[in-house]
Length: 277
Ligand code: HPA
Image (tube, rainbow, N blue to C red; front, side):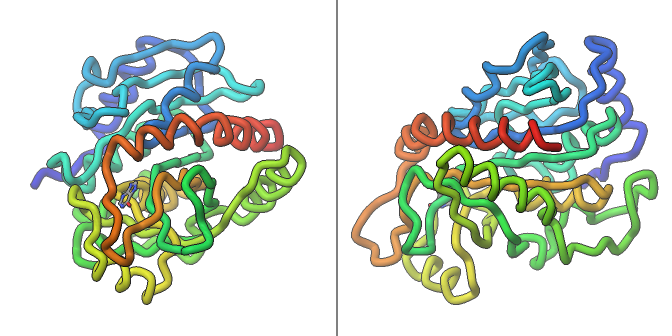
């Protein structure tokens, strides 16, 4: 496997700089079916990620593969409409590349979103869940996005991850949700490699280890962001109840359908947070 060098990351950053002079403060990654929110960005430059060198292209329905740089709530943002996943065949370092490019372009914050299944039985499809922490199950088995030569330009060999998700951003998100009347659950997210959804036994295991929501993304990107001291906020859109008893089935169509219900709430929450950072 090839690890990413600083030269490769800077080549991508330069390709973006040649199209816009905007210096993003906030990088955002929009998960499955959640991309429509990016339509609200003003004065924007849109880049198809297929036109960028080295960028891991998304091959999944519901992920447009577009990068939008512009303004939202008077903040300069760089938004990924769609992302790449490990199950598509990319390496973990490749999945981390967009976040490192955001950092090189100047981003101080990463807002990362995903569609997830609820393991916590109190959660309902359509709910938003603020990530208080994650379990890096795939990373624990050796597939860390930070594996390989450490890039000192970003951060230390052994980064602290006791607070991946920024506590001040938690506070802001909680206040915004109360003010604007958005129900906001909180919990622990786990990233699995996918692409198969979980068996009922997988899900009972996940419940036992303290998982509230399960998905196939976010943890690599959040880990890379934290390595370079970016301030991270993570939000899951709960698209389905996980099938703990084996009596229902989960489909990607269901996940995309729930995205239409979740995207407006997510947009309201994120814009509220943008106004306060
Ligand atoms: N499992 C894993 N990933 C998911 C799910 C799920 O139930 N729903 C949306 N993404």
